[in-house]
Image (cartoon, rainbow, N blue to C red):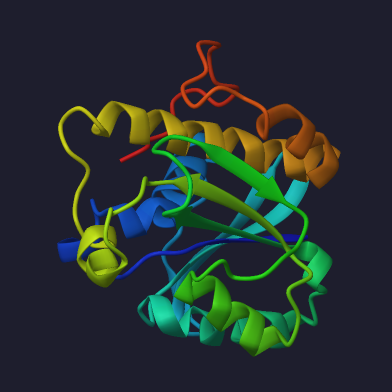
Length: 203
């Protein structure tokens, strides 16, 4: 069973912001595969279902970003998961808008949600998908930037990136992280080819 955690902040106020791309990918997968993400527990809302013949749990932590690890640790304790079962999806300010990066493991790169998960699990040995939101131009206003919505011109790019990240999640489930890295890490920011998943909601 795979645990797919999309990072974001709970509440309608934050639903369309740059920091909530992880939540958007979970919504995409939920819609595409008919997995209801409506169970409450472990400081999260979550749902269980099947993606490409693999059992999965889709998770949206409800603790706000910097305490995301609390939800992940609770779910892991409930069923004795291994970190090899975990995939974390987050935004990334160091990538241009729409860029996707798949990694097998690594540090937080300054992302508070990812850092919280690393601290809670005591390891950085878990897969992650990073979705670019562009640089704020000023690190001192980074918090304001990540909590801002995408502009009108950026929104289609962000929506496509969510779809692509959902597609990459499916490749990881089916074929492994290495295959997804080969397929997506050198890809154009806005690939012209149609996405693998159809019918998912990216926003």
